[in-house]
Image (cartoon, rainbow, N blue to C red; front, top):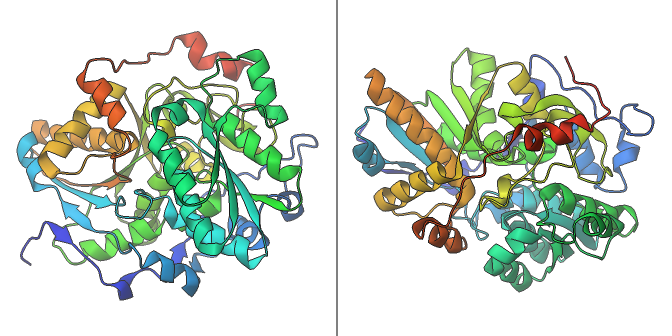
Length: 455
């Protein structure tokens, strides 16, 4: 077949079902635990925070979960997203590797996040929910949920990590435009926020802290539900529309990925691109390498421990079996705000423990260097988070050149960087710095945990 740079699907080819990897994992995940009783958490424990349909999806072992037609109708605004062959980047790198990227920046919010924001808002609407709270790091999740809640007539309250709130003012304005109220976290609106501010009045905030504030608001008001943009099983499942579409798009070429890469914060975008390919590994004997690319300043997959820990900083969530740096770990204020999370999704953690996936940690400057190379060769300015996937893809392509072995690389370009130009300004002016962790900074918070390391 004649090669093409842009590989498209029709609206009719939008997936009709999400893929639930829990049906195929050789080793099931351990259950979340009640922090008080250390007993497994049941649906009743989660009901104050989430609508029941999402709770069912969280624990489901069914391989395919049907996407409601109302959700697919909204997906049609930007899905199917395009798959590109990065010919110019290949030429720049002088590599025998073929590089493809799935571009999720075509959504209204500019990232992959609406893939789960829309169904979450939909299921809340079906249960009669009038108000939702959430957190956001770089602002992409908050933007996506603001967009989705506006569509379904739901009020939204967003706790945005303070350093990102200050670095990315236009993300806040996007959320305001879609009707959301946005607060720089930690705030004095919650006990969780006041506790953090009492200990560190200049705290830059973290996703864990923002989660604590949003969860507290929902837990204390029966009229409010909570929504999370990553980590949880149902969130990762909603994102599999990315990989499912990519597989269909590769069927229109004479290629198939040897390597699939996604940047990693809590797991949603990495899972979205990789889980459908892992299904082919499990069911059809394929051998696709799946690599999670995380920041070296927040290296939970490559340096953390696999143990039970809280999903938030204060300790309001159930204990989750995951790779973690400790729930009190506050990452350095890197510009990839969406990756500044202390833990990893349970599904991804189990897959890494079982060696079905890989993880690489990358430094901020090498990521921006790769992001600029990509922008200059392919025309799209990537989000700082997405530059981690690009940098990992570049490393794999250069390795292929050194070895003289062709391979096909696919990465998820999870969002554009048009609201992140201050980060590029810092890079070009030489003000962007590396954040290298000392042993105490890396492991100090883990030493405080009273939960055992999981063998």
